[in-house]
Length: 291
Image (tube, rainbow, N blue to C red; front, side, top):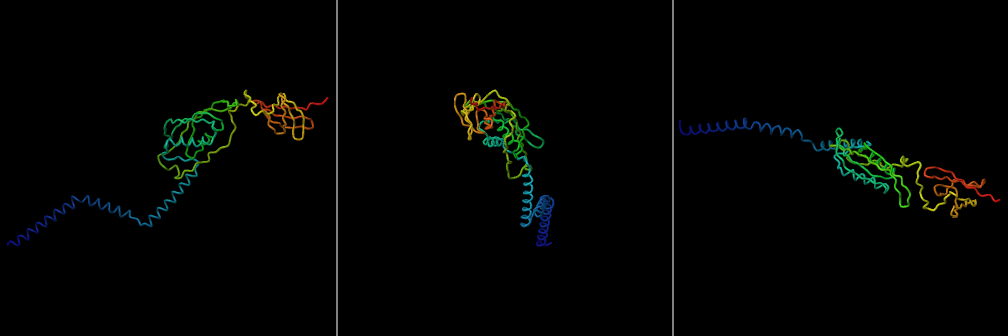
């Protein structure tokens, strides 16, 4: 065997060894990596969408989202997602700003409680004020779009006097409020719109029907007690009080503690209705007959 043939056979043997080693490396050592890359390529190819199809799907999702938002917005109450505990303080400030200056509100944060799949911030509110102001605040809390509930409430009587010494019949209160929120956004629309929180006045159940305090006559109105009817004229009636002061009054005119309700020209008398601390009294003054 000549030298040239031996060299050729040696190169062929070397080539076979290289091919064998390369095949072993590719099909044994790199087989897992190749399979992984192949699966990834198939996944990427499967998720390749046409831009027109993507735009159509996006528009459809927008329509569905708008429908869901309208359903949530139509509900009387919503439960927002992960609200701050400070938000309730701002809510109370906005509500109280539209009420009387006599209303006092103290807000204290208590705790966070879980109610089934929801959570609730707990607050304690204390203070005092006119009954209707307190009622309007409670109404705003209970009717707020973002769900708030009052599980406990207590009232008490409170009497204050103003600078003129007139008694003011008020109430003091203590109530607990739970402000609900959720960990996801399934229970509230994207755009928040508050409910109508205004309410009209209601009967003050804490206002005493009979009171010991009689307000002073700060407006210097006609005091009917002990007064005398002096004369009747077409424009009204002349009445003099016990101090000698003369007043011209007519039907519907306000007097101290009441009103003039009727002028009877036939019987020469005038009638008054007085409210003496809750006790209603009718007073008639007759024109003295000339002897």
